[in-house]
Length: 391
Image (cartoon, rainbow, N blue to C red):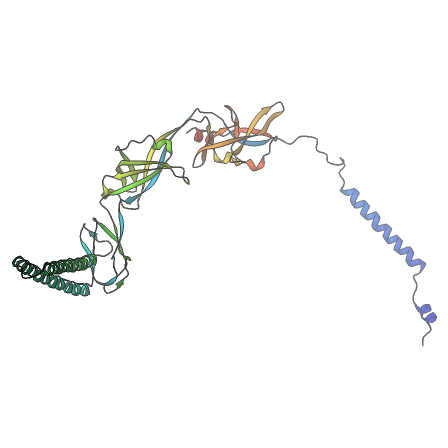
C-alpha cells in the first residue's frame, strides 16, 4: 500500500513567484478597464434634459355648430305577392297527370293536377245504383200505402196495416237520402282529386311527378300571385305618421321608379327594429319583380344642435358615447382637452354629433393614438377636412 504522507509530498505546490505574476496581470486588467471607461465619458459631463419637448403638430378643424339637421333618408322594403299558396290534394293517391311546371303562368280555375280516380268512380257507380234501388223500393212502398188506404176505407184491413205501410215508405225514403248522400260524398272526393288554381299567378315550385303517390295535404305546387304585388317598408313612427292612406308615392327600384299607393300603416312599433310597417300596393306589377328591393325617400328634420366631423376624430367612449380631443389655447400654449359627444347621424366617413363642443373649438381630426389629455400641441387647420364637413 502507498503511504498518504508520501503522496502528499509529491503533489505540486504554487510558488511565490507565480502568485506575484497573477497579481500583476490582475492589476493590468483593472487599469485597462478603467482607462476605457474614462475615455468614453463626455467632456461636457452627463446629459441632462433642460428644455421642454416641442409641441406635437396636429391637424384640426374649426367647429361650426348648426341648430338642426335636414336629412333625405331612404327606407328599404321587399316586394311580395299579396297571395302565395301551397297547393296539394286533400286525400292522398297516385298522381295521374300534372298540367303545369315551374315558371308557367296559370289562370284562376285552371286544372293543374289530377289523381287517379278510377276506384272512386267505381264506388260512385255503385252508390248511384243504390240510389236507384232505394227509389224503386220507395215507389213500391208508396203503392202499398195507397192500396192499404183503399182497403182501410172499405173496412177490409185494420188501421195497423196502413201504419206499417207508411213506416216502410218512410224507411225507403230514408234509404234514398242515405244513398244520395253517399253518392254526393264520392262526387266531392272526385272533385277534390283535382288541383285547380285559386287565382292567377306563376308556378314557383313543383314537388311531384306523374305516377308518384302524393300524401294527404302535401304541397304539390307553390303558386305566387303576380297580378297584385305589395311592398312592406319599415319607417320611424314620426315619419309613418306623415304618410296619407290612399296617396300615391314613388318608390325607387333596381329597374327604375315604381309608383305605389299606400294601403295601410300598422301603427304598431316593431320591438326589434323600432319601426312601423307601411304597406304599399304596387300600381304596375310589371315594373318590378317579386322579391325585389324598393326604397322610399323621405325628408326628415333632426332638431338637435350639433356639427359634422370626420369619423377619424372620434374614439369609442363609455355608455354609448364617443370621445374627441379639442386643442385649447391656454397661458402656456395649446393643450389637448377631451370631450364627450353623441352620434346623431353617420354618413360614410363623417358623423353628425352633439355634446361638449362649442363654436370655434379646434377639434383634432387625426393621429389620436399619439396624443393624451394635457399634452402640448401645435394645431394646424386642415382646410380639406373642414370643407368636406361643411358640405
